[in-house]
Image 1 (cartoon, helix red, strand yellow):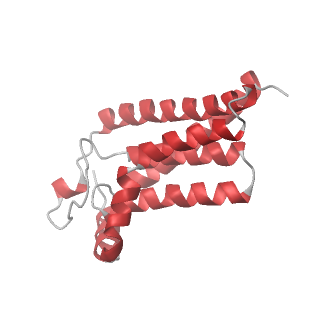
Image 2: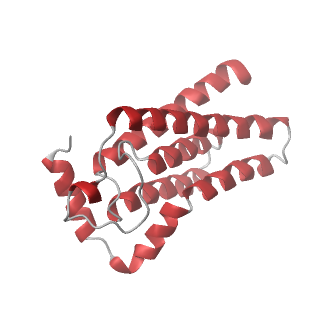
Length: 176
C-alpha cells in the first residue's frame, strides 16, 4: 500500500530533479556494491590488514550480510510493487527489479556508512561516507525506482543493523 503523500513526494522529487546530473545519480545507484566492497577493503588497508583491521573489516562485512538478509526477507514479506510499475507518471531511469520495500541499495549503504562512521570517529571519514549514503538514497527516488518510504525504511534498517553489529562486536569480539 502506498500513501498519497509517498506518491506526491516521489513525483515532486522526480519532476524537480536536475536532469543534467542523471548520469551521476545512475553512477551512485549502479556502483553501490562496488563502492561498498571498496570501503571494506580500505578499512583493512588503513590497518594494513592487521588483526585490528581484520576485525574492523569483519564488523562491516557482518553488517553488510545482515543488511542483505533482512532486506531480502522484508521484500519477500511486503512485496510492494515498484513505483514505475504502479504509476505511469513515474519514469524509470535506472535498473530496478522485484519488490520495492525496503530499498536494498539504501539499506546496504547506510549499514556500511554507519558501520564505518562508528569505527572511524573522525569527521573527515564520517561526512563523506554519510554524503555517499544520502546520495544513493536520493538517487533511487529521483530515478523512479523507489518511494520515499522505501528509502526511509532502508535508512532505518541499515542504521539499526550497523548499531547492533557495532554493539555486538564491542561486547563479544572486541571487549574492553
